[in-house]
Image 1 (cartoon, rainbow, N blue to C red):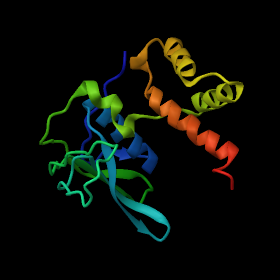
Image 2 (image 1 turned 180 degrees about the vertical axis):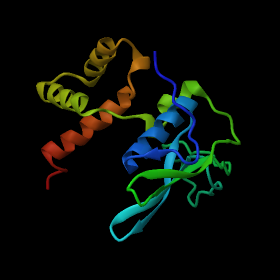
Image 3 (image 1 turned 180 degrees about the horizontal axis):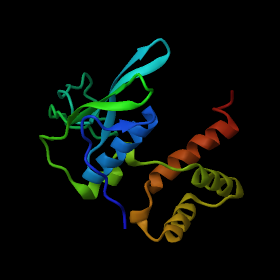
Image 4 (image 1 turned 90 degrees about the horizontal axis):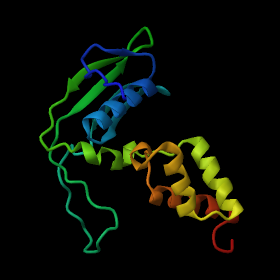
Length: 179
């Protein structure tokens, strides 16, 4: 059984920027919305301020081309859900501004399909790569992962993500075209 995360609140502290991003992404996955890094302010070469927002923030842009794109567009709705975190003097990150209200429907069954929630860990990547070198087909490779983890709902990526990773590694291994 998965543990429920606490809602973000102003004043919460974290030890690193990565911890802030990881926490908000986990909260977003639990609450079923996608997250993007909206802005980062730097002082010298160090990050001092970050804004993480709902992916539906902002206005809908009109396409300049008539061509259909393979990736479905994200419908922007001016969603105001976001958190802002800043680096304090004690090198801790503190949430300074938290807005949790969305102006669109959230669908928990779709949360695992958001790009920010899909990730293939290093062990699985290595296994996919070795099996590809050995000649194991992608569907057999993926189905073995499904059986090992106890079902499709326990895998944070899809068969197409595996295929894309294998295609990318083949391209790197074999080189592009005939260059």
